[in-house]
Image (cartoon, rainbow, N blue to C red):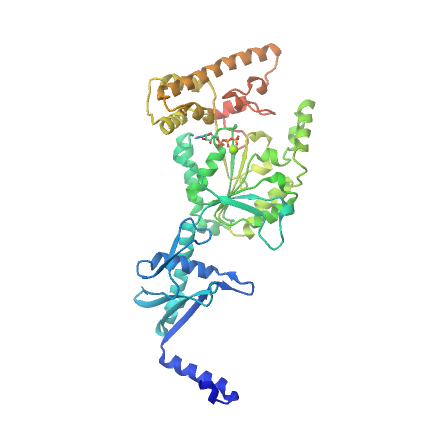
Length: 474
Ligand SMILES: Nc1ncnc2c1ncn2[C@@H]1O[C@H](COP(=O)(O)OP(=O)(O)OP(=O)(O)O)[C@@H](O)[C@H]1O
Ligand SMILES: [Mg+2]
């Protein structure tokens, strides 16, 4: 209307002066935060943080609410409905938030406050909102388990390097059977790490930590990783090295990982050629041949030890912190010392055969049992024989609804006694043949499954597992 009566040349000036006049009499400042920003219309982090902040702070005061499934959030988020306004106070200053939309996809929040408080709002309040909002998002987020895709299916403009599923593993440290003091030490180490942002900055080191978990199959290495992720609320990146073609692919994959995550490479000795030259001298031709075959089955993966080391040492500093990297292996002796030296793998955790303490925890877990007349017998047997927690757990799980506590414990005693006999027989046979070979004790029976193949026999773990000798490489 107004514009019709104004000559075109003067419209610009008129608009400018009206704006000035309005600003003069209208003492409020408005800031808008759009959901989509930039040329590519990316979802704005600020909008997302504000959404979480408002959902947490204002749902009690807003009259019209909207339930949203926010991407990556584990529960419904209640936010104020479109065109709804709420007020909150910050250091005695009144602030109004309103939620608006231009179209279904173009939403924005408007923050209104008196211009007198410009500094307080722009310098502290907005910072606080964004920080709190991000913290709430982390708290509410659904945790993910990522696995890497083969590079044939990567697209340049999409993040297709990792696929993910929701991570919901029930493992926790309370139900993890291992020596109590060791468990506490690991827990404390993790908590110290997760709170160590300032510390790492102070000492000038990237905020990361490496763990090496080693021990026979079925001693709880994977379970412990899940417990770690649950304790710290981290995502997991399960890196399958055999599908990574070369070092540059490895770098691309790792650069896409986010902070607050655990990157795991399971069975590191099987994923990459790590055999140091120093082992070669000791090997007889049969073992060498076996190794050659193993190498062939590594599907031509060209990730090299040095590529992996470079990544562990270097790339972290460039792409933000708070990452834990974990290697697991059944044969710690096969690993090159360069890979597991301190600073790369900061802590070596041995998962060993089931001791009596671990058994008691499993009995409490599986059978709600703190004591029983058979415990004494089991303690003696566990001292003589090695059985994995996985095998003990298997015995302690009732096979039918009617099976009682006693029968489960007897089953365990039976399995242990059977193992005892077998071990004696195995030794006798070996003595007759004039050699002791780890493979000869195992025939796939329960418990014996732990005595894997290759150069590390179960004897290695027997010594280390009972805590008499720690691994000499540490
Ligand atoms: N220390 C433990 N405490 C409680 N449960 C355990 C423990 N170790 C093993 N188990 C039980 O045995 C199962 C197998 O254990 P897990 O997969 O963690 O073994 P692992 O050490 O990762 O074996 P592998 O070397 O074959 O990968 C688990 O699902 C868990 O129920
Ligand atoms: Mg495992």
